[in-house]
Length: 290
Length: 131
Image (cartoon, rainbow over all chains, first blue to last red; front, top):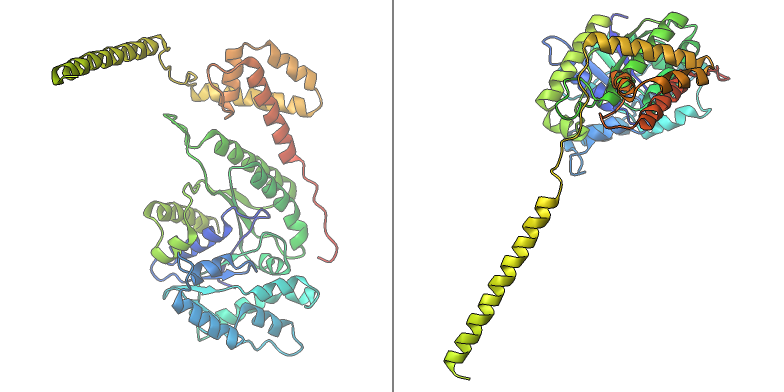
């Protein structure tokens, strides 16, 4: 596949996976002639709901109407999985009933609650591993939708069957961490088990960035607060160790994201300028690494 | 009581109120003058990048020694250091210290950081069945 595929994952919930995935897809599509597609694969549907609801909790009519039609016509990601794991050929049609146009160059495949069922023994587990790869081939070959330059996946905070399906075919695993002990510990656990989970598939490149970094207080000239710097150093140690011990291609991105932005407001009113600049810098580093 | 008498009483009362107000303000001013002047939070003298590097290397060596099981040896070395030196060692390794922090408190921070690093580096991953 020629498409650049990026999976955002971390075992720890609440580190900013969803916001980062959405923001990176957004800044990617700001470049002329670049088209990006974002998948929400988390059954908690955080990204889908952020797009579906206005800041006051009322439904965003354009998307809600489209979503209801997709569910009614059985054109959701769950229906695609159901079709793929069924007895017959994989004949799921790719078009704008399955993919939602946020903008001309930024498209979206929402999640559905039914994805919870994928963890039960209802599907052929071996077959599900190949689902995302086959789905991407269908998207790439479809004449109903454009050829996407970048495809980003917002994965659930666990090695779910769907996460596994994404990780086994993506080019980059993107791991946001926060300046706290549990995020750093989660990074260590994730990297240590990634290879054995993905084998025999090749392990993708691994990129890590600090999200919700804190600035130092007072007149300090340091770039980060002591806490943020300590956990960045720890992340660097972990990455150096696993890249040596397990032969992984890893990178700790120099760009950290400082601000915490309300995701719903950012989606519906646009990214604040400084927040956008930070993600554009991170995106440049990702493009160079991928 | 005549109108003049009432006015005289009011004048006396007004003078008493003025006197009380003066006394209260004097007492407040006296208390404020006794209160120690607010001193800014003490800060550590900034170190050069070379000094920071040296302290980080030293911290790393002490951590490795501590990790290898020689906890008493490390504790002995740290105890021998002057409190200023300890503060610089901790500050260079991004621990939140101030120039007034006690030696015990700085030692506690360093110990906590060693334990945290050890926790982060201990990983036991195993392949789950069925994947």
